[in-house]
Image (cartoon, rainbow, N blue to C red; front, side, top):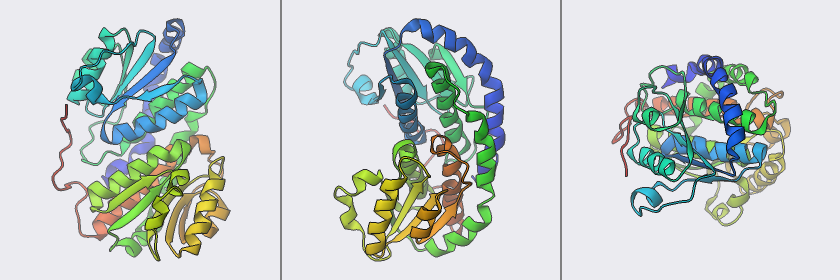
Length: 339
C-alpha cells in the first residue's frame, strides 16, 4: 500500500499523457450527443471517486449528475429513460458484476457509456462504448490508492472537454509529489492515534468524497470505526457525539468551504475535541489541535487529489503503528462481487 501511494505522481502524469488524445476525439463526439444527464455507477473507493466526480461535473458543466443505485437495475429491473444520458462506470478491476449490469442496461436504454478502469481487457472494457484507462500498472494492495486518484483525474479530464474550458489539471502530479513530502510528519503524527477506535472524518464540496475515502481507509486497514460527514451536515445532529479528546479529521483547503470549517473548528475547540486538519490555510491550521500544512498555492478546485495523499499515508502508517498489515485486511479481497 505504501509503495503504491508513492507511485501516484508518476501514475497521474502517465495517465494524462496516454489519455489526452482520446479525450480530444470524445470532445467532438459528445458535443453532438446533446447530453442533458450524467449518471455515475460505482462501488467502494470507486464510488467515493464518483462522489467527487458529481461535484466537479455539476460545477463545471451545469449538467445534472446522478449517482446510480445499482439495485434499481439489478434487483428491481427498472427501465430508465437514458437516451440523452452519459453513463460512466468506475471500477478498478472492471469486473464488478452489478456495475457492468447497469452499463449493459443503460446501453439498451439509449445511453452513451464510458468505463473508467485500470484493466484494458476487463469485462467493463468490452461493454462500454469507450474505455478511459488509468495507467497505474497492477494494483496489488487491497486498499485502493493509486487507482482512486487515477479515477479522480479522469473526472478532471472529462470535465475539461464537457465544459470546454482549461481546468489546470496538469499541475496535479506536481502537487501530489509535494504532498508525499509530508511522510515524515505523518509518521510522527500517527503515534498519537495508535489507540484510536472511533473518529469522524469531515469534508465539504469537492472534498466530500475524500471524507468517505479516508473513513473507508481507516476502517479497512486500521479497524477504526470512522463516520463521515460534510461540515454543514455535522452541525445537524452528529455534533452531539463529540466529547473531550474525540478525534475529528478534516479536509480543509483554503477556498469557499474554508469558513464552514473554521466555524466547525471553533465549536470543536469549545468542546475540547481532538481536531486534525489537512489544510493549506494557516488560520485553520492554528485552530486545529494538529495539522498537516499543504502548499498554499494549491487552489481548492485542484485540492482533492493532493489532499487525499496525506490521508492515505496516515492510514497505511497508522495500521503499521497498530501492528496491523494494511496489505492483508481481514475478511477482504481485492475484487468484491455484488449484485
